[in-house]
Image (cartoon, rainbow, N blue to C red; front, side, top):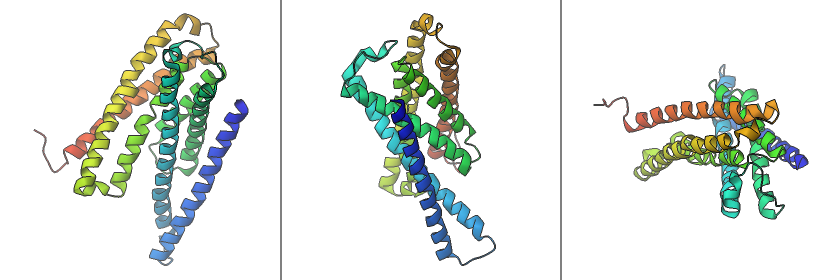
Length: 265
């Protein structure tokens, strides 16, 4: 299924390139309509493009997360504890192909999203996200290609559930839906869900991942250096990034709950 992996990655790149051109065209039309050509016309168009582009990438992130998490949950339902084995379940059913497909879709998304974060340079603080994407994609490819550590792939997939709730919260802030009474309640719910899911899946989930890797350590240490790094080094880096982002998420939640105008007791 390597050809499928390449095809889906190319598909993601086409979607992103078309999306980029559409975002640029929309930004150009909005700025030209609101303001006739002026000295800062290019700056305004750039700012508007970044705003629209960020919305587009959040939508793509949500679509990827919905598909990948659905694949992970369905695979757990079908295969259950057999996904905690060192190697993949010995079956070639449609159910297993769906698990493979969800892995491939996530791989393609991580690669292309990281590339466009670099090329579009819309935010200066995205270096950690680029590192996360490339390391995650490397792990997905390695474990998938050698048919090992399905539980590690499952962990990567399940962590995407936080992208869904975070992106929804992001849209509430961007379009100020959180300013209304009902909107503020929904925003708080999704914010709390984001925090809880991050804690449970991305942080507590590391404990289960570490247990299984420790259990299979004798086998893992006989693999190539690249696969050993993916199992130990790459997972450690992703864990550190998840802890760092959890801290930032917690601080952001405190800012929302306790605005600067209010003094904390």
